[in-house]
Image 1 (tube, rainbow, N blue to C red):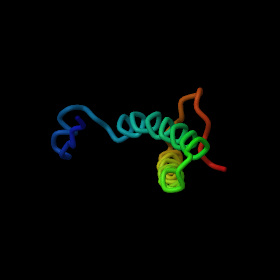
Image 2 (cartoon, rainbow, N blue to C red):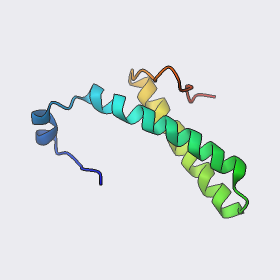
Image 3 (cartoon, rainbow, N blue to C red):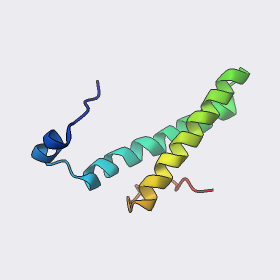
Image 4 (cartoon, rainbow, N blue to C red):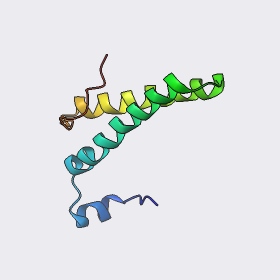
Length: 81
């Protein structure tokens, strides 16, 4: 279960913007890989279409994080085409 932190809770817990971005980046990159696999392997058109939407969203998240200065883990590719 994910927890949404208020700005006050985040500040008192020591969570910084950089820590947040660094935590999101690997998950977004994993989402790219999973969505790409779904696009390639899905046999139903609606599933393939949905996977494509998810892929576009994950790429956008990684690109925003990269533009914000987040360093991608070395084992994962950069999302930009």
